[in-house]
Amino acid sequence: MKKYIKILLAASVLSTAYSCKDFLEVEPSNAVDYDKAIRTANDAQIVVNGILRQMTSSNYYGRNFIIYGDAKGGDFTLFSQGRGLDPFYTFNHSAQANSYSSFWTSIYNIIYQANNLLENIEKLQSQGTLENFALAKSDALTIRALAYFDLVRLYGKSYTDDKNAWGVPNITKTLLYDSQPARSTVAENYTQIMKDLKDAEAGLPKTKRDGYVNYYANKAIQARVYLTMGDYDNALKASEEVINSGVYSLYTNAQWVSSWSNQFGSESILEFVIEPNQGDLARTSLAFYLMRRNHQTGALGNFLASTPFLTALNADPNDVRKGVMARDESSATRLGSCYKYSGSVAFSGDKGSSNFTAVNIKVIRLSEMYLTAAEAALKSSVPNPTKAAEYLQAIRKRAPALTPATAANVTEDLILAEKSKEFFGEGIRYFDMLRLNKTINFDDAFAGISVPTRTSSINRSFYRTILPISQDEINANPDIQGQQNPGY
Image (cartoon, rainbow, N blue to C red):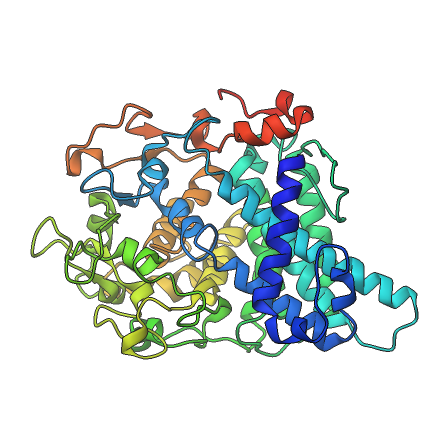
């Protein structure tokens, strides 16, 4: 893992210097004296800002990770190949080509920076500092937990499939230059994730903290992790704590569409900030990848809604979620292009109409907690279909003409279908399909594209549902060679 460590050292210093420029100009920092940059709680917060900034890169929440979670889940399709990130949809990846090792490197860079911050805080505390680092420490632990959760879902089998399979290396300390850590198991990764989240709770405020993690964002991540683990009792407990906190409230049907043109709405539990001229990826942004192909704007129309998704969405012509969909290039009537990350179909952004490519990433919304609680209540050790139906109906009523959810008709599939419509384009669908081992059907026939690298229907038994460890990483870390994912 020598190569990986070199990249992390360089990227950590450069990104921190970029994000914390004013502070670092007071006392220049490099790989040797980086720890001297952190002396006060304010210094630590500046480093947290830099880490959050890195999480919105194109290789992570700024674009690729969100698209990955939908392109592989059956709700997206392609109108034409070769426009960018096709291999996500076609599963055309191997250890030698399209391995998307940028996920590995970028996310481990974030983990490295979190580790560095945590170690420096620990060092200062051992020296008797009077500074209160509780908030920064909790920020770093929660960020590290989220990063590991995302990594293990990309490179490891589902917890509910084989928790003893290889996950990713658990690295909780800064490493020596020549360190070559082996992969931990999926179960070991999840143990570390939950430890970090639990350890972080006490230092986080229970008030809204726009652009940052708070106590309820931590709890919402816990709910997402527990659901992925199939621990429905704890998923229900965590999601209900967020719901019942009173800090957040669901958008009304009249508010739902306009919520995408505003920052930090009443449903937004965790939102990563993308500022114009800082994290704005412009024509390579998430917004542009989901827009209709347009030569004037430069959008390529990379991904469109699949026909089965649109059929479900059109079951109620008055479903408010149709309001962020616009026609795609295939016809004047097919509403297959998503404009959530343009703020709205009117290109209004969330910082003004001229900044429609610098729209914040809504990582977790309250509606997810309602649908998590619905599924968890249905599957808990003491199933409660009445409660499940109540939570589901709170979101299902966004399509007012649909038959209301009741204790008699609520099912896992009904909840999953609602989640598909609510979170289209938000990077959730694929991971739900994997954890539940659902069959994923791809709409290849829509544009008649050829996909020789997978069949039109798959489930998690298909080896390419998880990414390979790149050959470059294996060459740099021979100890990991025998731990390549099966089939690659």
